[in-house]
Image 1: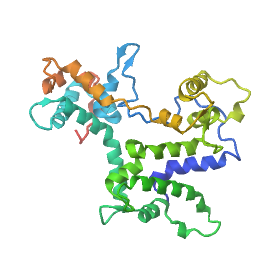
Image 2: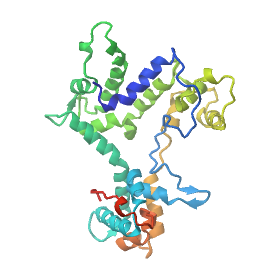
Image 3: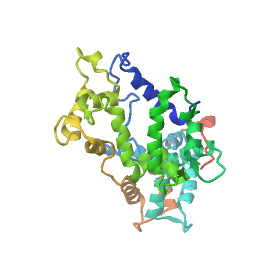
Image 4: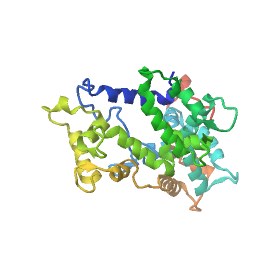
Amino acid sequence: MLDSLRVMQLYTFLVVLALCATTWCSAIPKPDDDHKKRVYDKKLSDQQHETNGFHNADYDHEAILGRDDAKDFDQLSPEESKERLGKIVEKMDKDKDGHITELELKEWIKYVQDRYVIKDTDDRWKEYELGSNNLDWENFKKRTYGFTEEDLAPNDERAVYKEMIVRDKRRWNKADLNKDSLLSKDEFIHFLHPEEAEHMRDIVVMETMEDIDKDKDGKVSLEEYIADIYGNDDDDEEDEEDPDWVNEEKEQFHNFRDKNNDGYLDRDEVKEWIIPEEIDHIDTETNHLIRTSDADQDGKLSKEEILDKYDLFVGSQATDFGEALKTHDEF
């Protein structure tokens, strides 16, 4: 039986196979529907930091807490919000000198952003019940798919997974930096989350091209681009006018994505689209928080300075929710 790592891949793969025989989408979904997100730009939050010239504190809350915990803090009274923030500040203060330096604040924000990747890797690593510090390919394959290629009889229906196994093996080899055919836990992080590692970026681009380039001509047409993002079946929409958001996305394709104006996205253009030039969001956010909270202008933050601006860091509602108040062992 396939484990959870393959669920989304399997679903996508089977849908691709079915596209030639059936009409999968009867209408173009709206852009805020659950569509594929191809761009990896490592933003600290999906929120805008400024909206119409006004600062959006929700961005700061997600940078400091992460999305899920930021939502939970919003349900706390100011008193409880400050209390929990105080415990977070104690964790930030690695050298226990009573102040949060720029470096300590950066390290905390990076930890929050990496927390999902680390937890996801830890959870999956435990599934293999390893007797050593490394994971071998056959163990991974057997545990993930429930079989190996040798188990397949002629015309076995499980052969549909062969392409997925080939892709996994290619990604595995790229993640295996020391080329010992095994993955350490650090290498396994790169295998599961290739977008997080510089040396894995080519694999991300290659897999993206394979997913989007349906006619396998080595480039992405406008139709393939729109269909991938929004699941649009052009045949169903020939007689209908495109919604505004589709027209806007087409403009993005022509004016920004297609650099050489040949009507297609080549490999380099796809890479620039999904892995844009790195912006140091952590550095920008750290400077913003210190600049806004550093009352004595000494370049670092005391616990008192942070708690005085608690609504900037974590937020809360000034309401007593009684039994509805949530607690977090982590904090």
